Length: 134
Image 1 (cartoon, rainbow, N blue to C red):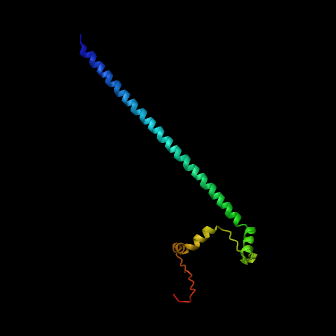
Image 2 (cartoon, helix red, strand yellow):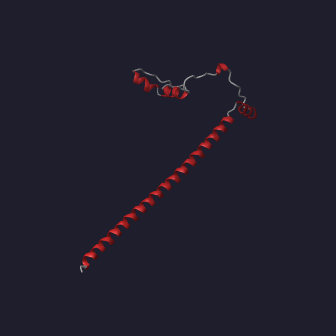
Image 3 (cartoon, rainbow, N blue to C red):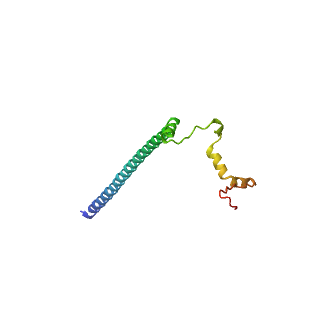
């Protein structure tokens, strides 16, 4: 009988079974680790979404409080209670702006840059409150 051939086959079988078990275990561990990472990132995302909702709620609450404090009735009551003596502006004093205020102020602030692009010259205005010459 040739016992060496059958034991060599058994050894190869045991080694291949161990390799397959090790590979399967490693793959299983990788899957469990990946699922854990997904769970952690989902929990972090949920916490960030809750913080965003809470911040939006606070912004809405503060905006509502500001709007309530800036109503004409509240301002008139504060004017009387603090004895400031402020009066409502007349319609002649009010200037209505039809365009975007942000765009208009940005263009005014950067007039020198935009004029240089068009080849124009803008002379800035300086106010001297002390009367001294520059």
